[in-house]
Length: 340
Image (tube, rainbow, N blue to C red):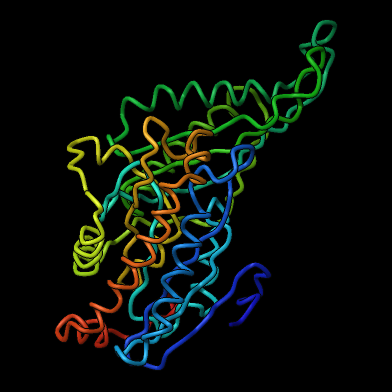
């Protein structure tokens, strides 16, 4: 086990086995401000460690090398993107993990996202005595948010724009000279993301033009790509999860609406990967709600840890034992960071 991999103090890579087919299990860990494990990273990490331990015991017998990759900072920090760039996945033929959700899904929709911070700089003035001498930075945000609201009519169904104001001023009797917001833009693919990102940024430029404030835009973390679920790995996982008693409901049109984004998408662009959801019986609570945090420390979540670990381990073993599929994975060039 190598701690602090890639100069990330909280990352690690643990290896076992010497078989020709190398599989990486991602132990993702992160939490959300104020609501903690409302996305279930405790379940993700524990299931990954369980799968790694199970595979380590049989890896040489079944022709596998297993690598558990500890990947911090998924909630905006892009830990997997950094680790991918620094070689944590070099030589890997397939990557996988499970993610808790209200219900099971073997190929959940995962879309691209751009995360950024905007800042308007204006000029202070007494808000009652000399308002004409001020430049209202907070008004820049109001104009931008209004423009985004009008833009929504012309966005694709899968596009998403959302954010929060992190600073609107310092006192109600002072014209705000410093206003900030934290925003995300999402689209089905990286290509579509470029289009909607440009349109949203123009809304913030409109705020600066209308008020005379200066605009600064800073990218936070890195862009997350859409997920490419490997169809063969996904089918193996579903079969194994169903053998454990898991049920995959047909969610119909609603399935496409419940899209998320993750840095596992970037891994899937260069390595055959899966990122299935594993249900924890949380409804009506859903991800990123305090109620979901409670369900991530429930008996159903404990079962998801064990089922997820076993299903991932069985999937890796099946991949190694399926001659045609194994040869497809082995025939690919070893994973290298993008651009190398």
